[in-house]
Image 1 (cartoon, chains in turn brown, blue):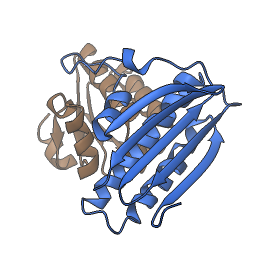
Image 2 (cartoon, one colour):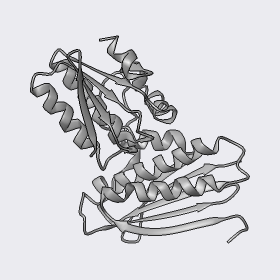
Image 3 (tube, helix red, strand yellow):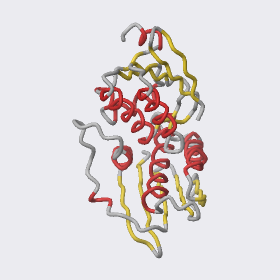
Image 4 (cartoon, chains in turn blue, orange):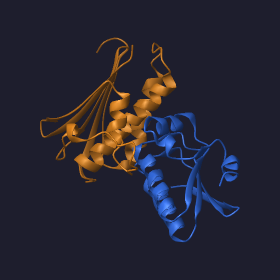
Length: 111
Length: 141
């Protein structure tokens, strides 16, 4: 899976550089987030700007990351969701769980 | 076949790497539906999604991740209705025992069948010949 990471103001940003976040590749994202929390990172931001398609496994990977963040007294926030990706968060009520921002810059101001 | 009807019958190995191929076929078919009055891009996304969810269900649960098995997908789309059948030759499961997700507890899994049920008008899973078939339909007019 193509992921790019960048650190800004102590926040690790993971850019998902894939068109699909699905059952084929979402476990890679899940493991990357697990590793980051395990290595002591507290605050993660996942940027989904390139993702045009998400399925229940992709949503599940993000839920897993969210729970991981809580158990490490950290946080996981999301940015740059495409409209159809956002509609999946709404369908599964996960938009009530995650803090979702329009842009990475906006998200960084809210940690 | 009726006029304006598209039929696709395809078999792929029981591996998640083929999800995007099948999803894309469904999406491209939806974009050909000139007479569909609703949001065609949204319909395309939903077809991609239900195909993906149904295939994952077959690959991981019914066929128990066995890469030697095959998943058989049949799509029939007319001006009136979209019909999707996903066949597996695994053990199967009882779709009616799968509860809807509990929105108050955060689980990693358990949203796939809920998504299919939310986006389609009818969903059933039954034993056919030597395997199982997940059949789902959606009215298009």
